[in-house]
Image (tube, rainbow over all chains, first blue to last red; front, side):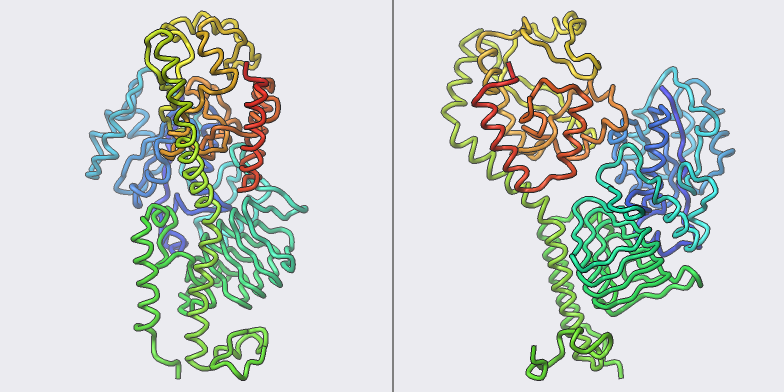
Length: 320
Length: 246
């Protein structure tokens, strides 16, 4: 039994737009979240049990991971009051409970009343377990594995720089589907790319991306999962977020388009685009995709009805 | 298109980038058009999964109904042979490592699990992940016949109807195998397991484990409605011919 602790980053003001719908640990960068990259990394190093310390929306973190069977791990999500440093986490979970599992010290000190997470935690009782080697036993997930010089959470510019740096090496052995069509052009599964679309390396087209004709994608462009680029749009030096709709003839340059939010990463400024035909979320009300997938047909119908109702009766007045 | 007959200008390409949104009505029209287009894209993105699930439900339900007499006959045969239970539940690993109970017609003697450890030593698959052997002594006479024509797998259509499995997908492994998987081998758990896959229609048991993972990943990458139909058709052929299973 090899153990490891992953510390989720708390909300950061520097990249607040990204963490609106989901905690930072769940935000996809090249299709997978930092948490998923790190879990695959520690699983590759031989870990079997992982404790994830989450501050921001721990229930969403837990929902995204399940019990960790996807990586062959046993994952426990432990809610925390604040983001611990590596030294604090070591003192709290590693040194205080040298031989037994972390559940003794963890359940004693946890103050969040999430009973479901707690029961998951108490289930985890292991006798003789060791830790991964020191550099990898406790990890603060503020950077991707294997790229210690990248700090994606420092600013939006750092986020896009990290995404570009990760492109050649985001293909961990547990991933399916991303193929390098031409040098620097990586395309995922179930993508729809029209004939007239022009792809310029380096770019990353995530799973299920939808690209219409006469579009120009690249250079340095990341389309996250199920991004939709309409006819005639031009994207360069940008990230288009998951399930984000970019309208006809829209030009996105040096920006991060995340649902209806548009961030200029050079100037660190952001605005909300109110005209849906320019930029919007594919999901009604910008719900995070995991939640939307769980919605029943009835709820979804209600959402569409509300959307149409809003359009008919609650339109803002004419612009002049 | 003659734009003058329309109450609003609906096509941006006839007016350039911005001219279409000159008035509030045109703006409203564009927003309305986007509602519709986003709905279309959403449907297109989801259609693959929905189609697969619909195909699973219709296919398994149809099969169960059409072949219910065959099910009755097999159930009677198994029951009358040694009086044990008809169905055999086995824990298998489904999508993302989630376990479920897979149904089979029982083809082994009642004490089969106990004898299993002795037989592990005679494992034919050299890489040690999967277990398979010819002339397994635990198989009953009826079981041998059922296995030859893969009839013992038929109750899995119930698993398909339940949504734990799909008609086409990588075969679900047992937990003992999954414990030995590498991270790369785990890729075959990325989709719902199925009754049949590339591996089953291309020589069946005669491929080694790494080849099996390669085929499964190839299936996940190329999966689509017509691929599924093709695999199913070839499976029927392979089952009727009875090759590879015995």
